[in-house]
Image (cartoon, rainbow, N blue to C red):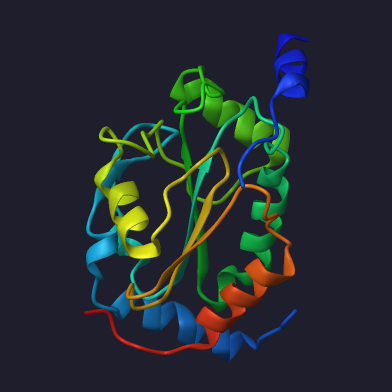
Amino acid sequence: MLRHFIFAGCLLLGTAHTSTHAQSSANVTAATSAPCPRVLQHSVLRLQDEKPQALCQFAGQVVVVVNTASFCGFTPQYKGLETLYAQYKNRGLVVLGFPSNDFSQEPDSNAKIADFCENTFGVKFPMFVKTNVRGPDASPLFKQLAELSGTTAKWNFYKYVISRDGKQVKGFNSMTSPQDKSFVREIEKQLAATGSAP
C-alpha cells in the first residue's frame, strides 16, 4: 500500500524488424569479439549479488543505459524497456539499468530493488546497484555519458543510446517512452551501423 501511495504521488518531471537466426548469431559473434570503447571501460556491481561486472562484456553491441527508480511515475517504463530488450537483443541490443536515489525515489536496498524489478515487471535485462547519476558524485560512467551526449540525467528514466563503437552517445529525456518512434529509430539506426571501437 505504501509503495502504491508513493508511486501514485510521484511528480512527473524531466524534460519490427525481424532477423534470421544466422544474422542474430553473426551479431552476437561480432559483439563478443569487438574492442572495448572507452565509455564501457568500467567495472560495476550487479544488482542481484553485488558481484563486479565489466561493461566491456557489452562491447560491439548497441547499449541503452537508463537510470531507474521504483517509486516514480515513470517506473512503468520498466515494462517497455524489457519489451524493447526482448525484441532487439538478438540483433545486438542490450539495456543496462542503474537504479538511483538522486531524485529521492529509490530508497530501498539493492536486494529489494532486484526483487521489485523481477516480480513486478519481469525485468531480465542487466541491472546494477544504486548509482549516483548527476553532479560531482556521479559515477565515472554517467559523467562520461553526460560529456559525450551533452546532457545530464535530469530525472529518473533518462536514457542514453551508445553506438556499437562507443563513439556516439545520444540522450533521451524521461518523457521519451521506450516505444517512442524517435527513440526506436535511433536504436535501429545504430543496430544497422557497423564500425570498430577505438
